[in-house]
Amino acid sequence: MNKKIASYEPLIIEAGLAERNYWVDIWKYRELFFVLAWRDIVVRYKQTFIGLAWAIIQPLSTMLVFVVIFGRMAKFPSDGNIPYAILVFVGLLPWQLFSTALIGASGSLIGNANLINKVYFPRLIVPAAAVVVALVDFLINFIILVVLMVWYQILPGWQILTLPLFVVMALLATLGPGLLITALNVKFRDFRYIIPFIVQFGLYVSPVGFSSSVVPDSWRLIYSINPVVSVIDGFRWAILGGQAQLYMPGFLLGWCVILFFLFLGLRQFRKMERSFADLI
Image (cartoon, rainbow, N blue to C red; front, side, top):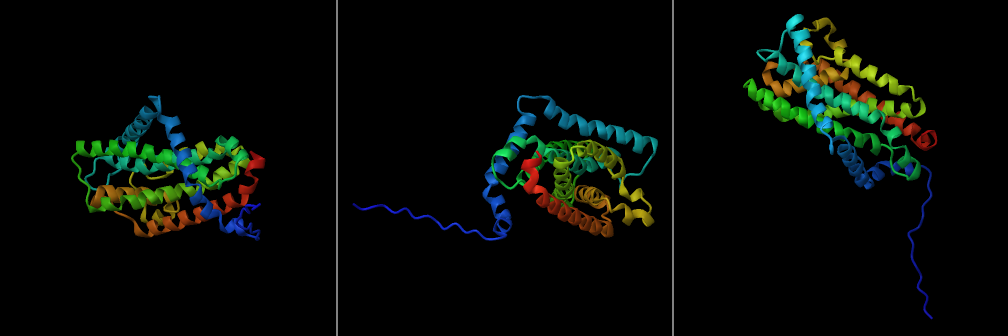
């Protein structure tokens, strides 16, 4: 009697193999990324009016507050002939993208504790998927900006073609600190109280409600250590064209800071990743 002999692929046990295959595993688990991202979007917007309404009301109300405080009371200048409301709202676009993504990523591992405890997958997928919700809010805010620009009869220049570059820049600026905070948040739960303070403090020290051109030239480069400054300036240059100038030394410094925090965040995240299941 003939016996069927099943053939199996050889199992290779090699030191460091899992580490080298980590980034390949991220691509293999891309469907899980889309599932988690879609779940977060559905939870936020499906069968709820508050989710969509809040995405519209929050930036508009913040814009009105900044216009009154910085534009009317402090009388800060705008860039060129741009209405102050447009200047503020363009600054709010990347800031809302940054802050929403940071908050979502920082608590993503804790929120998916059951999934992390049961199956293996690259944990980097979880905070990355949480950032997608911020992109949806960004698209809603961008539509509002288009309506405002039509109302004020402002037409963007050729620089608008570079806007995707600055969107990527904003996401990278978020991912580095987000990975660092979410990793530390697993081990030290007190970090969740620090995040709202960081977001609130960053809103006022970043040039959201005013143009970064009001900063004295002697302090401009030091001010650009805040990576969000370069992101906001880039958005204004891309959307408002020649009306807003891009401070190139600060822009290059901002990229350096973003890449540094991205390296630091990835390094700390990967260092603590093996202990996530035990700590959660």
